[in-house]
Image 1 (spheres, rainbow over the protein chains, first blue to last red):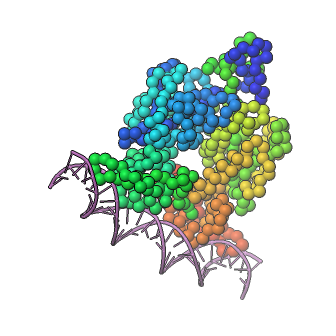
Image 2 (cartoon, rainbow over the protein chains, first blue to last red):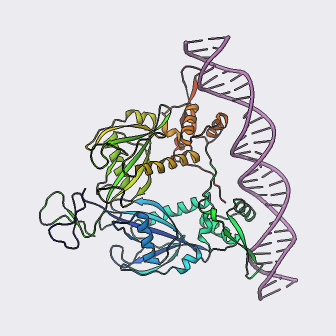
Image 3 (cartoon, protein in one colour):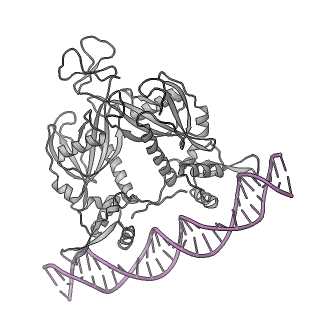
Length: 241
Length: 241
DNA sequence: CCAAAAGTGTTATGCTTACACCCATGC
DNA sequence: GCATGGGTGTAAGCATAACACTTTTGG
């Protein structure tokens, strides 16, 4: 169980263990709401395997950081963003999910506000030669088992919006109720009644008016922000018993 | 990224990698409902670290099995039970959670019926010298970060019973409504109204009468079983929007 | 004045909750 | 016959869902 380095010569590339060990990575599903669409950030792989195919951003963990620290570090290295909403999603570990060998990945789930998505700039790293946002409902073929990870992430996102008021995490700091409704309709993939939506979301007390208006082509709309208590308030009423 | 063995001499204990790798384990939280109490199976460690302290059953994954296969294999090796309700809980990977080095654990969550719990027999393995059920609300000091894992597992179990009708997974194949209510009250840690509980649980259609009665000290009680559709029916009504 | 999006109330229905007494059996 | 747990119904309050028109602005 000891994690000794090779004791003959201190060469790089020499970590020797009594039993075989898997590699462990973190992969991130970054969601943003841009151009009235639910978008996911993918990178195009620059090397084998799956060269030129699209994949989730991510990378190997370091030995001295926690899993969440690894996710936040990779996120900052690859996109420059920090202090975002992030939670662990699921751990994928089928033995054949990576042709290079046994690689277990801990998937994370990130919701970016419009401001965070705008300031994001991809540092095309060593093994990525492109990166861009994709419409969640029109994705390319994906490397590894990343299609399964995205399917799972969409389930989680839907669950979140069905049961909590966290949809505003995907919007700018100030937003209109119509914009918020658009997020819910896009994620849940169904139309919603405007009056019922407004009544329900306002009744939770997580939103407050900013006093400002969104000027546009037509009648200006009131702007809202979410209140401090909103994020931890993942309130949901119970079904049982 | 290659997982070559040492090429000098083919000794056991020689797996050499270019970069350091963590060990990966699975740990299992086994719940059963015994003696009107919510119980958790713990093993007493026979070796260092945390010698003689209580811990969750679990073990290292093999290279050719998936995470869930590893969990089911360990479960069968350590307790003899198979084909149980099992789901992935969360992955714990703080760098200092194991004093022997970097060990990441994927925690699993198991619900045992009364029959499964009864047939369970612990094969005291190499590093366990005792094993027994503990009341979930009166646990000993635990090894590693297993107290955090159990806290998380209890949250998940509560969530499950609040939102689904899966409480019967902890009972025998035939059970009375009072027994089922007792499971809910114990897990949720609050008293429930008998009439409302019965109406609600019966209205879901996941239960059916077996026609048999539980004979006992007093008036015999009708016995129920869950219907086939019950397990996948993790129905819950939405809060938003 | 026209187009476009913002904003607003009411009603019917069904679910939730609170609450108390009789029933069947063993001893 | 009494102690014990099994079994049952109703009414009030609340949340939900369905539904259409007026308001405000820009061009």
